[in-house]
Image 1: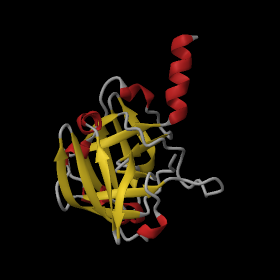
Image 2: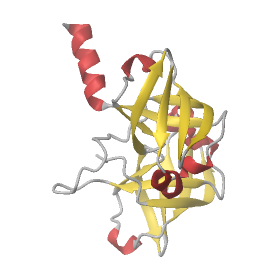
Image 3: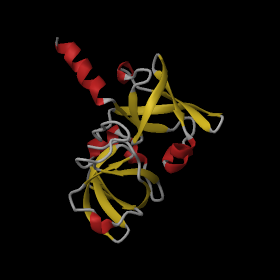
Length: 196
């Protein structure tokens, strides 16, 4: 489990195709001596397992299924990646409860400066858009955010300067794809209503 609070922007240092899967090596400022093999780390909102590590880097392997359902398949050497280590019991829950399971790909429609902040409009795929509500939580590329408003399949977000600079969101442009994870409570509430 994660909280959607990014603590490092990693950089993909190598990409290797292995049959249907892909192996990425990611550079980080974290002390990799404190990262266990088998640890779960959120990469742009996608939970991946550490399979190898060295000083200042670690490796993960991504299945063909994950490559087809997330934007991880777009990564090349040099790609910047929002990273978050798994939450531990007793950690501050600064964002919201995030599973690290990407629900779908959204597309950035527009980005508009507003004072010191930026308003980003994202179009969600159907039927995912039904689970996005004003003032609800959503994870975009691994970042816990609050939805400002919803208009059909589009929703908008206000990105404060700290988040803009401390994550990869500041590098987004119109047309970019983003990993989306809807709020876990919304997912289970919708499922309960379907079966009730």
